[in-house]
Amino acid sequence: MSGYGLSRRQLLKQSGMGFGSLALGALFSNAASAATTTLHGPLAPHPPQFAPKAKRVIHLFMNGGPSQVDTFDPKPMLVKYAGKAIPLHMQTERRTGAGFPSPFQFIQQGQSGIAVSEIFPEVGKCIDDICVIRSMMNEIPNHEPSLMMMNCGDLRQVRPSFGSWVTYGLGSENQNLPGYIVLCPNGMPVEGAKNWRSAFLPGAFQGTRIDTAQTAPDKLIENIRNPTATLDGQRRQISLLEKLNAQYAQARQEDAVMEARVESFELAYRMQMEAADVFDLNKEPANIREMYGDTLQGRQMLIARRLLEKGVRFVQVWHGAGQPWDSHTEIAKEHRRLAAECDQPIAALLRDLKQRGMLDDTLVIWGGEFGRTPTVELAEAGANNGTVSGRDHNPYGFSMWVAGGGFKGGIAYGATDEFGFAAAEKKVHVHDLHATLLHQLGFDHTKLTYRYAGRDFRLTDVAGNIVTDLLA
Image (cartoon, rainbow, N blue to C red; front, side, top):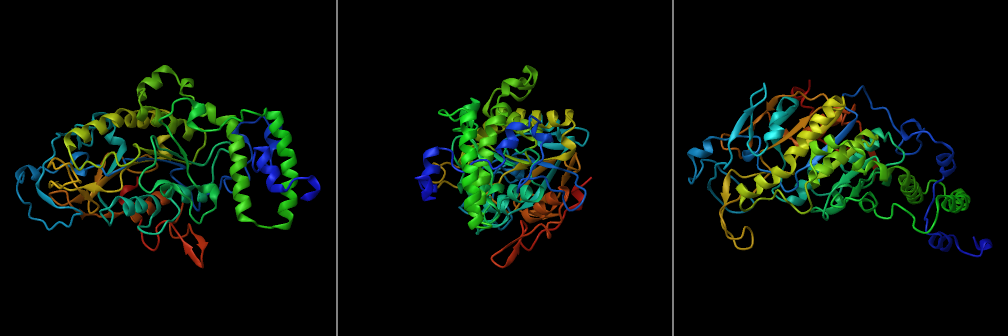
């Protein structure tokens, strides 16, 4: 490109715009809403393989591993064995001791009478809309591989995340926002962006993380505004860049890296039009804001609902960075505090979706990467502050729940053993859960594949069975 006086790389760098929107003219000339604008490219809406029950997903990720025996799986036998060795062989990550009954009471809720811990009083009131799975299974008692399995379907290799597979299969209904958004406040979780990456899928399907610790819309998404150029000025820059990109592309057909960058910058530009609006919670009525609560978790849940309404396909909501639910110590205090932070907002989300007619075709998933032991974790220097008041990691039996999207409400499916350590009845592996969720979205999990390195990959690897008993 010497005829322009600058190399192509120099011009793009100095323009401050990167790759521009190849369809910018259409964006400015068409005043239609995102819902009525024809969308092309990888995020264009795609029909599923068969008629779906759900068309969008919100995954409430309780990072660190909530205890099943303190939330949704009551185990009265632990009272009998309090302070005593339980008659089970348990292989745990660290040394554990005697039976440790829950410090919380369980209360039967709703017409279904499902017992829910007292720390979730508002969620308990919604139990008739919830399908509790008490027999979940993961494989390794460490955060890193368990996070990868729950989010990406593989313990060891970095694979595309569940949200990436969903947007790959369905696309998005909004061209001005990412199809897959991750709400994760105050830093990154263990394994960072691997939890929502697209891996070998095209980059357009990777999750876009938003730090919801921020409250101002312009701070939620950094650099959403160009401080040095007007929209008209940016349009002139883009017009030139569009010509340069076209020349460049002619000589390099099917350049995947370039296409991914173009898509990324196109989307970043378009987000200037809509992102500030969707993240401005002041546009919600006061009674709705009050229902969710003016807290970090309340704001996250309300933002998630607004994103779904705008056509975002997959929203993942993290309960903080690190592992907030990783209660190796003081579980009575910490689990009560953590549940109090999200109980009202989660119940508000379920009620709000239901009253708007959205719950029927929205999958709401709650859970962490594994559960916790029914025995106390023994004092160990550097691991639990030398106390005996918490529980260790436990992937062998734990609870998750799903609401909406064609799942049965008001049921408790499967069971752990009488102490709550391992799944014993109607076991549900993570692969089975993924297969079932994909089925509700209109996909045969064995046929939603992507060819890479000579092999057809899928979210469920070479496993997974649809759990039809969970479905209405």
